[in-house]
Image 1 (tube, helix red, strand yellow):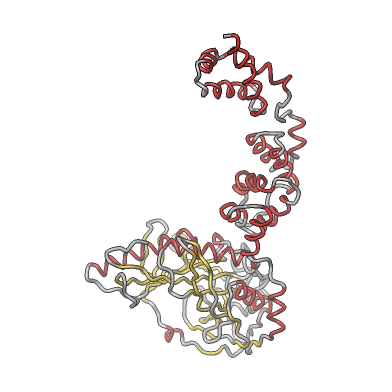
Image 2 (cartoon, one colour):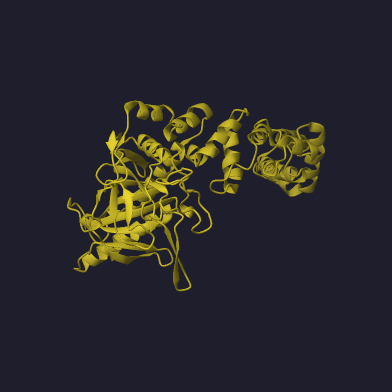
Length: 477
């Protein structure tokens, strides 16, 4: 990003990602999204006296799985801490988290903005989520279903230097977590949320400025916009001779501006101490190695397979790899067709736009393969192939539809010759232009035949017939 008023941004990102577990991290309440308000709560997640937490082993496994997918070092012994603060969405008055001993340290995400760049991670730790505040008609309602849902917090080093890099990083991180099977990462449901930490400094300086944190951003696009807006806000203040105050801010999606929430707390304000009700967690080498062996196929491995086995370029591979279920569907369809690249084109153009986030692919792999084969074999043109995929979205077989409705290309000369002669008779001006040496006129005649056939005339055979008939006319002259 270009400098602004002589300043440049220094950006770090924190991502909170809810884990894909059936129950919460310290109790057996449902962690599913969409339960009626305050129906997935119990004395443990509400912090009632005498209620004791019990660690969810699956949450630990998924945390380690995330760390391995992100090239982290895995700590062999870790424990939990209490982060103390008062807010209405936290009925216990504290959050169980990991302060001193996160399960995962280091690691990186590779981004490809203008050039390849590694964004290094500080840590990944496991903690519990807070509840949700609903502001309606001047009152605030509390839904505590989310209290205690397990989430991981992924913290970068302050190495991002451009809002576009923020977008690239979050997109890449989300894809890695999806393919690792760690989370569904549905930002519209709040299972992935991010915070942008940003300061500015004079161009060329190595000293960081005062950092402000923009909390609870609900989309990747808004995260990039929030970073850009906050960069300009801070640079404007410094350029005018002002001082940046450390604070927590929010991004207003309606105004496109960041707004003050509260003056920033420091770590000492949280009064961290070791969680007394959960013993230290010891991870053996055998346990970590088992998780490593059972890891799903990585993003990099999928990308390599799509390129080497199916010939997809980087752009098409990225579109096919939007979610694990889409790429798995594609490879199933590609195995059934002679034309995997055509299958990818039809999937990208006609099917993926119809898929809602989290839903299965709404067409059978065999039907997509049928459409690709019909197109690749020249049995139908691209327009008809797209129409057949549309019918496949309704559960119909492309081959059966093409046969029943006569959608195959017209390829026999006996059927095409009358159409060619009709086109010549209907457009004497183009014929005359062609005979005078204006070869482009033939395209108009060819287009007339294609239109008469409803787009079904085979272009190559039609053009050969047209050349023959025009040659006969030229001989007559």
